[in-house]
Length: 192
Image 1 (cartoon, rainbow, N blue to C red):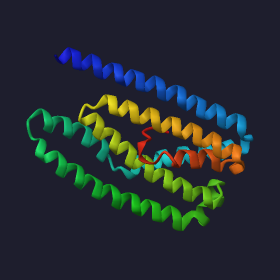
Image 2 (cartoon, rainbow, N blue to C red; image 1 turned 45 degrees about the horizontal axis):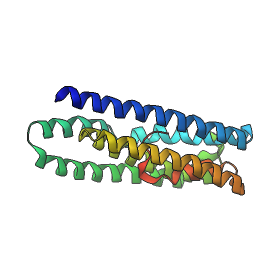
Image 3 (cartoon, rainbow, N blue to C red; image 1 turned 180 degrees about the vertical axis):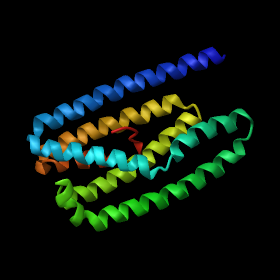
């Protein structure tokens, strides 16, 4: 039975990786075709900044949750898991609120330093919040060994990101198209 579970998990994670790789490639190809190089640079900088800040904002909680959830479930301490998740999200909300508020308040100051419009920094703060939460939710799914759900939410969110980015850009939102498309995936996105 363990070998069957291993094969199932590996299959779902491999399919997930393939889907996300293809959809992410399409996202950047579409963005590259619809935007001029300066606008594409704004999008890339925003996404990379959001990814780095989101990693810091989780304070390592996501990785710890992944390990602890599977450990507690395996040792029949499942009752602890719910409390652990609630406590983790309280900490996550506090750290993300501080970062969001900081980026919001300092957007005018950071704008010339990062060479990004202040509005982009505010959208970056929103993307950071969503990435932080979605990464944590993804690690919770992994902790519960729910690879099919993990794969499905990743595929849906990246498809929404791709379609949203293309749609908003074609509607004339320029570099805001991919940023709004990325933010519109809300908390189902797992990787940028």
